Each structure stands twice: as C-alpha cells, then as structure tokens.
Amino acid sequence: MARTTGTDLAPHELRVLVAVADAGGFSAGARTLGLTQSAVSHSIRGSERRIGAVLFERGRGGARPTPAGEKAVAHARRVLRLLDMLVAEAREAARPEATQGPKGPLRIAAFRSTALHLLPPVLQRLRARHPGIEPQVRIVRELGRGTAGEVADGRSDVAIATLDASRLPAGLVASGLFEESYCLVHPAGHPVPRSLPLVDWAENCGSYTRAWWAAQDWIPRATIEAEDDGAVLSLVSRGHAMAIMPALSLTGAPDSIEITDLGPDRPTRRVGYVTTPELAGSAAVRALVRELRSAGSAL
Image (cartoon, rainbow, N blue to C red; front, side):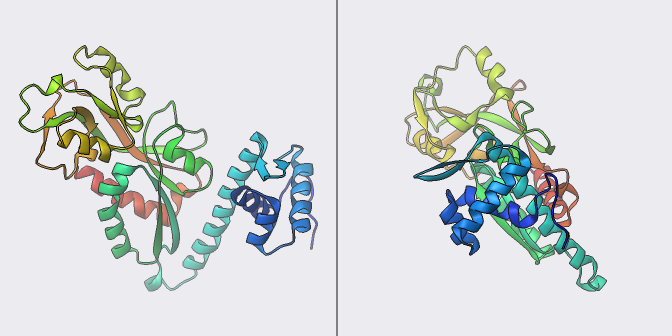
C-alpha cells in the first residue's frame, strides 16, 4: 500500500480527529474507536505534523481543539460524510432500477418552531416516498451561528435556518423556502393590550427585523425574557404580557391568545435551508428539499 505523503490525511486519521474532539480527550476518543491511547496520540501527532499546526490543547481534563483544530475537525466531519455518501449512492446506482431510491441517514438541524410545526408533516411524507431515508433531527437554538453552523461544522447535512447574510458561514449554499410574518400577540379580550409589558426571547429577532423594531415608538423595552417561544405564549395566554412573534411560532396558539396583524409594513423573516455544495446534489437532500418547498408553499 502506498504511503500517504504531503499534507494528505487518510480517512482513519480524520476519524481520530473527530473522535477526540467529540469525546473530549485522547483516552475517551480511543475507547470510542476501539484503539489504544498511544495509537490515537500517534495519529494526532502525525496529523499535526502534516498540517503544520497544533490541533488540540492537552491538559489533565482532556483535550480540546485549538482554533486550527476546530477548522480541521469541521472539515474532517464533512469529508467523512461525503465518503459515506459516495459509498451509499454508488451502491444505489448499482441496484436494479425498480429498487433504487436514497437510503441511509439524513442529518437535519432545525430551530424549535420549525421542528415543532414544519418538520413533522415533511418527515411523514419523506418517509412515505423514500422509506430508505433515516432522518436524524437536531434541535438547535437559532443564536450565533445557529442551525447553519451545524452544517458548517459537519454535524448536519442540511439545516432549516433563518436566512441572514450576516450569519451564514462561508462555503455553504442557501435557498429560501418562505417568508414568515410577525404579529402582535396579547391576551384575548384585554382592553388595552399595548399597555402590557413586552415579553421576548433571544431567538426572536435578527438583523432582518431590527430596523423595524427601532422605528416603532409604541414598542416598549422588553422587561420579561423567556427561554423560548413556548414560554412566551404561556405568559401571554395567562394575561402577563404582550409579544411580537413570527407566524410559525403561533401555530396552534390557544384561544386565550389574540393575534393582531401589524399591517403592510410588518416585519418578516426569511426561512430557508442551508447545506454544503457537495451535499446539495445528493438524492437524500434533494428529496428533503422537495418536501420542504411543498410545505413552505402551503404556509
């Protein structure tokens, strides 16, 4: 067998990088892979030598990726996923046409309201049409790098994300699915709902709505902070507050909540999907996107 030269890393070396990062240490990573600690240490040192950078900070508490290591591990996850796809799709292409269809895991990252109200019927239709696909869903807070960051880091194949150019990691592809309007929500029957305190949560607003919020002199500063949109709805339904919320979060809202349209200049947010250029053409991702587009057009 030819020896690997230059900076090329073999798949087994990539798996070691990912295992150490995920397990938080060389010993734990070795147990995950069924290797000795010395074999894992040797592999990491070899990878660092070829790349020319220290990839892990070693300490008594384990090992954690350096900034260079975080980049290397993210790329390693993505490369390993592509190798999995290579095998799966090549095997599928070799099957008789009558038995063809995408198979295997499909890793999906979604923020809470899409996981609750958009994904369930989408996954139901996806499984019915492509029973070989095995959806694996991660619910991620839409903060910082959010769901798109899960794709950039190689933990997910596709993300349902709020599309905001300022937070889309480089090297990914994105496409819109639908525009989601914001509404005023308040306790049903309240005589002066705008007199109530404003409740908000961290994921509620991005750069796409900040300008609108800043221009509204009737919106008070939020004095109640909740962890998620479910907690916001609970507070509003019990008469404690008002809120400004996106439409998807209001799916199935109780009768104790009244929803008021904010007019033609109301803020909106764009919801779409994010994936890598390599996975965008895979059969499993394309099948999911078709179902997402169908669901988005119905909203």
